[in-house]
Amino acid sequence: MTICIKDKIKNINAVIGCNIGCRYCYAKAVANRFHLTDDFSKPIADLHKLERLKKPGVYFLTGMSDLYLWKKEWLDKSFELLRESPKTVGVYLTKSPNKIKLDDVPDNAWMGVTITSKSDLWRLKALRKNIKCKNYHVTFEPLFEDLGDIDLSGIKWVVIGTETGKCKGKIDAKKEWADHLVAVARKYGCRIFFKEELVHKIMGEENAIQELALEMEEALK
Image 1 (spheres, rainbow, N blue to C red):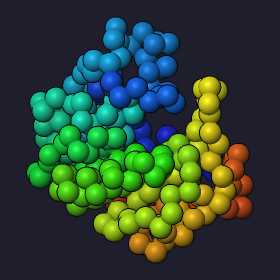
Image 2: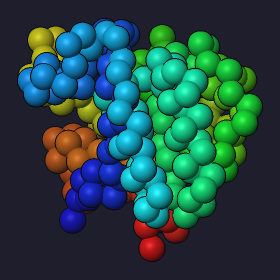
Image 3: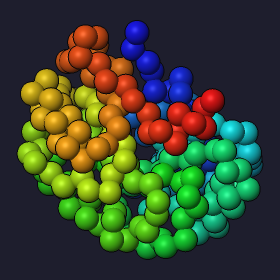
Image 4: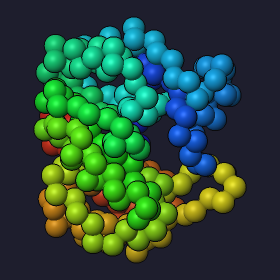
């Protein structure tokens, strides 16, 4: 049976807002629908929500934001709580690793980038160069094309997904794109997770791969 990633990795939306302006952004639509912020392009924070990190588990911290837009005190607070809670895993994502410099990242923090097409591949090198940490991951969602034989050295976990929603210009991933990415990820020893809609619409249950990183599985025991 297909697993919804949200059943395993819980969202902590302590920071809301982003100014990148992705065409397919679901976070802005959610923020507007529920009036979560007056101006989505200007991130706001409710750091009390980060207290949930004290409870062991796996938490996604940038579902409504991008890490590069976090103020230093916001990130420092999340890192402080992760260090105090070694059985917790915190997951962060950015599309702008070139604008971040981090070299004191807790061992239970997972730093990653979003890649949708070949034009985003520079983010892999920038991630490894600018963010020094124990655990790297990459989210290939929405996947817009075959990415070729990319370098995933140092990456422990990859997430693959197709575009969701009904946005104008929507692009559905193709099975051969995901198959190629899986082959590359296996070559580098990455754990792989297919998002639910990719399984249902593109890959089929018989081809589903839904692996969490081993450290995440341990945190969920």
